[in-house]
Amino acid sequence: MAWAKEIMQGGTSAGTAKAINGGVSASITAAGTTQTDAFDLNASINVITTAAASTGVQIPSLEIGDETEILNLGANSVTVYPASGERINSLTTNTGFVLATATAVKVRKFTTTRNVAWLSA
Figure 1: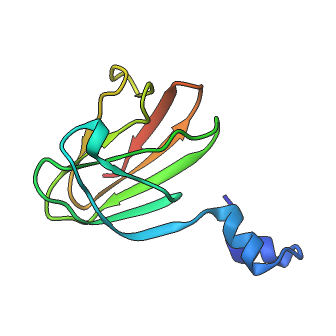
Figure 2: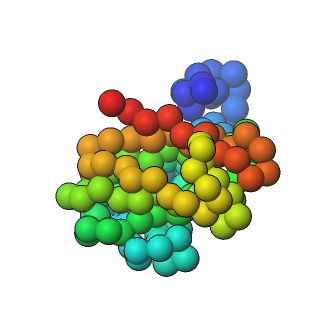
């Protein structure tokens, strides 16, 4: 994906260029212990800074081709859940996966119900 400054070089305004690249939520507190009460992510780039044991976050229902990135800087692992009725990789529908602390994941929506996740090292 192009950087905002590269998009601006083509004559696009700074605000539009930043919107094209997506928003950043830089201070998220993971919540809940199930898909239904996990913290609902609302930005393209998400940084978890507070994570109590057994808490989680939920990816919103995205458009096909959309991506979201999540970085866990909290003290504990968190569970990342798909949107309701969706699945991530080979997990069953509505099942989350554990994102370790100091780890990031990029999730891309490929079909109306299937997301694919790539984990950092």
